[in-house]
Length: 142
Image 1 (cartoon, rainbow, N blue to C red):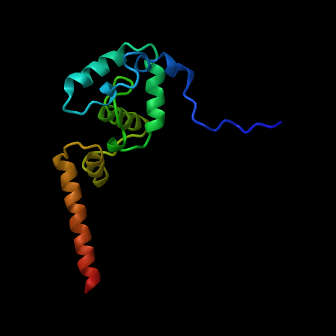
Image 2: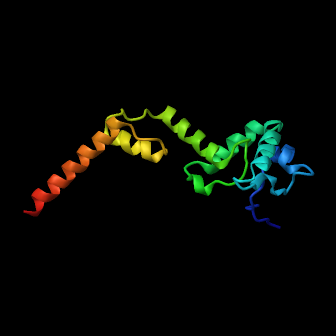
Image 3: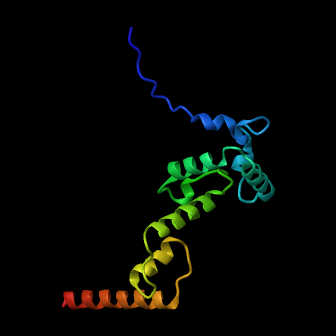
């Protein structure tokens, strides 16, 4: 007799020890409270912070959400909101690869990518680049 491999997603063993999987929290909407439900979000984060498997949860969330935009992250996980998890990933990436120096076009786009205010030096670099593109385009049309 042969058996097919089990290809269904099996949760890691640690998940059964998570606070979010224990009554009365298992399946609760508390973990998916909307942004305006601040008390519920705070309660979920507080519960997560006391969870015995917080580190494993944090590592799993980071792995599963790697490269995803803020809009594609949902719920309170590892004691963080979707935005906080996204920011943590951005910070981790920045530490892995150095940021471009301010005053460059690359730095200008980096500010936009991480939703930061653009400083004057980066804005000037972007403006100069746009002017250069416009001049090149005009010269090519003659």
